[in-house]
Length: 100
Image 1 (cartoon, helix red, strand yellow):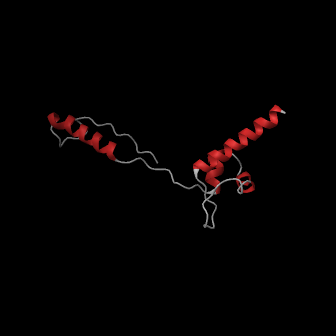
Image 2 (cartoon, rainbow, N blue to C red):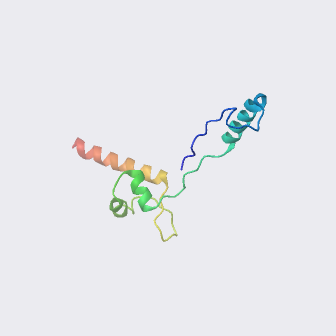
Image 3 (cartoon, rainbow, N blue to C red):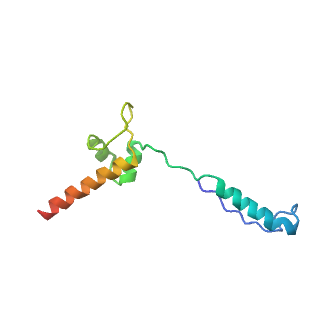
């Protein structure tokens, strides 16, 4: 969810004297820059992995033994790095088949 940008003018905030408005605006901008952006989860579920790789969910299930996943968890959880590696090997295999 992206926050809606707010247009601030000296007239929109009547309690702040006009000479201090620029200072308040600079402080608000500085505070906004210190707020960390929403981070992506480290592990992706099967549905998230399929969306990330732009493949069907069944493709992830069918290839789960070739994709490194988080061990010791009942759910299949993948990192983006492992999915990127798997996609790269798929591209190499497809290129080799094409060259034959």
